[in-house]
Length: 274
Image (cartoon, rainbow, N blue to C red):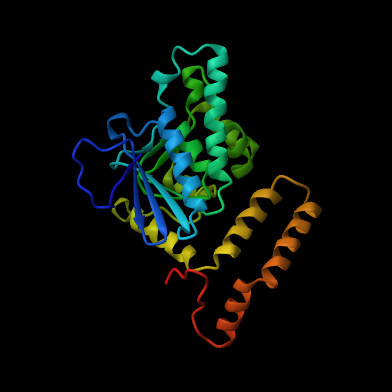
């Protein structure tokens, strides 16, 4: 794991994951362009640690993950690592990757995937585990594992049907077809239309900065309500929401936000991001 400024020149000695700080936003770059930013166990663990540390840092409000270069966000798992695994080793390997992606998915701050090119296999699954994605017009996504005699193993068979529906997700996995950036947007895999490749990271960071202006505890509560509510019955989810909403109403953060609205001034939340 390497810490670098966003504009640090590449010198051939950098690590496989770069971290840069832009005010209240952590920018993470998978830095393996020679391997189309493929995920190995070390990179996955680095991503998990960075997101976990960022979520625990009161001065960080969002994480943006992207890939080095213009060809690939992440082209999937590093197949060389799994080629000679025993069944027990393979299961442990996949469970470790699932646990890391689940931790990213459950982070108390938004994790935004800035998808700048190919996002296949594990790379697509990383997008599915993120809070949402912003995609370049060059982005192309898919789960081609079946063509290799494999199946998605980092949550793809579970998260994708929940996001786009069972039939569309199953068709995508069984055929190995790739989604264009426009099709991904149409299916709801990105909340905004595709952006120009040269603008991608700036748009993602601007989005993260916008989130950073909101009440940080409100953001955490929204993430929790959505995350925990989607897997339970509606009545239980509504009870969760009302409990979190009540805590927000009586909290210091809402007192500041409501007073700022009524007095027509910008709110000054704790450790304000302005």
